[in-house]
Length: 145
Image 1 (cartoon, one colour):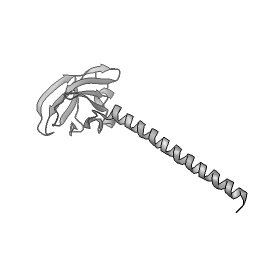
Image 2: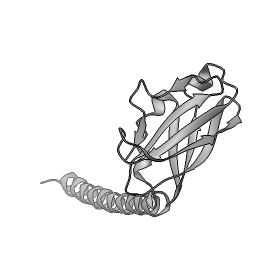
Image 3: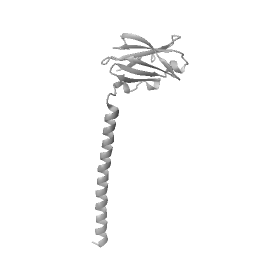
C-alpha cells in the first residue's frame, strides 16, 4: 500500500460521507416539499378533480361540500352559441332526480356556472343553447361520481 492509496481512501470516504449527507438533506428537503404540497393543495380535493371530460371542453371543480363550478368550452361554445344552459340532475344517470336548468355566464369563449351538488350521489349534466341544440356527450350525458 502506498501513501497515495491512503490519501485516495480518505478522499473516497469523505466523498461518500458528503454524498450520504447531501442525499439525506435532499431527501429531507424533498420530503418537506412533498409534505407542504400535500397539506396545501390536497386537502379538499374531490373526486371531481379527475376530469374525464376535459377533452370535451368540460371542467367541474368542487367549490364547497354543496357547490361545484363548471367551465364549459364544449361543442355548443365552439359552435358560437350565444347562451348556454346546463341541466343538472342527481343519482342514476338513467333516472335523474331533482333536475334543474341553470343559465351559464359567458366569459370570452367559455361559459361558467356554479351548480349545487349532492354528496353521495352522481352529478349528471347536459348542455343546451337558446336554439335548443344539445350537447349530451353523444347520448351518454356528463356524469361525475
